[in-house]
Length: 303
Image 1 (cartoon, helix red, strand yellow):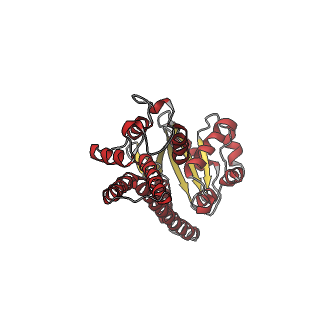
Image 2: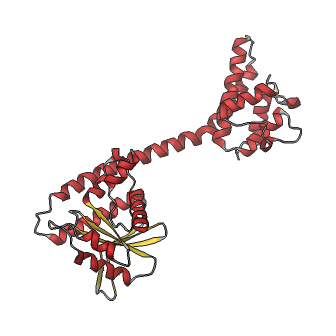
Image 3: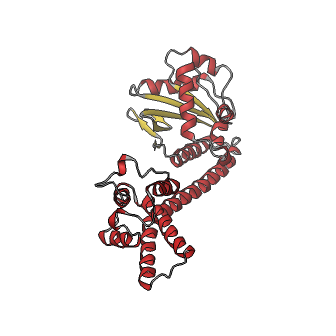
């Protein structure tokens, strides 16, 4: 619904010669074609039938039904039509009509402000997102050089912090690392996706993660609510027996992610959404019993 005021409507109706049910010099057919071309809207749809169903009344109903950007766009086209007809005739435009035309242009511009504002907000958000991705990718690549660092604890904390920020830019609600069960159990992090809760285990080690480390995450999941799953992130992957052993487990509640997966969602030209990747991993686990679905597979399928 547009927010045209009564005064604005009076000005528009005067300029568009809407007295007697008409709109400028349009016939029923040309009026229908003009609005269809301008907005891809059929003005003779029942939605716009109002009182007598005349062209003017249908236009009034459109003003009432459609939002500001749509009405502003149509008014801009109608004003262009009005001025073009005056030029072609040619007709002398009175001082009063020139002023009225200018007033109507201001009305159209006001209504269309929503389009420009929405576009600018979208562009700014996209630009900020690109900058954040680039920054996080740079950090990830720097952290990759810490694999030989003796300070394993620091490396682990850096990974947890990085992971939280990556999830944040994809608007996935997260929770930082915490302890529970009277401090006896450490959780590296958690997030919520599609009404399910995920406990996160992060490993950034030189050696490949083996099944014993995943058993620890299974224990934490089993001590949680029924709507809880696990995400095990191992930057350098895992030993070859991990996936087959997980597939044998009756309780298939863990999805796997490696460093390549994480890096793929940070490379902008991949156009890979983290949510899409996680949901695809979950789908693969549920339908095929497969704990690992890689970003490489998803990128290949998206081509």
